[in-house]
Amino acid sequence: MLQVFEAMGMMIDEDNFDRFALPCLREISRELKTRFPNVPLMVFSRGASFANSGLSKLEFDVVTIDGSVDRSTARAVVGDNVALQGNYDPRELIEDEEGTKTPETVRQTAREMLDALGPQKLIANLGEGLGGKESPRLVKAFVDAIHEESAAIIQAGESP
Image: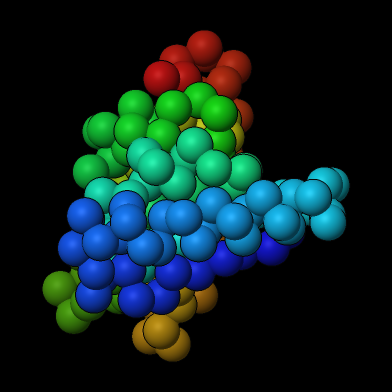
């Protein structure tokens, strides 16, 4: 798998993104698919979630969504032709003094993500990655919850 980043997407307004960045990403995706047809391609345009619809129409297999993306509409925006990657909030994995972050709350919030995005065609990951303060116990709870809750949703036929 190869991921292409438009790391400065947040610095470009939508019109200029469509005019300048999107054509470049189109050419990059076409060329990569031509050269490496069996390598899945992923794209992430940091801070430019407005571009996700357009990106989903290129040669990419996966569109990464950040924490700013409304999960309730994310799947509809990109359609069924691509998978999504994202966007669990890593702050849910940092224990606090009040003890409000537990394996149970992680399971609940992971299930909410799966209910919104669906367990199929999803790479469940953290919206901003691990920062070093996360609890290994809560990270394990996240991984376990994704596997177990995804299987339960699929088995029950509840996928959106």
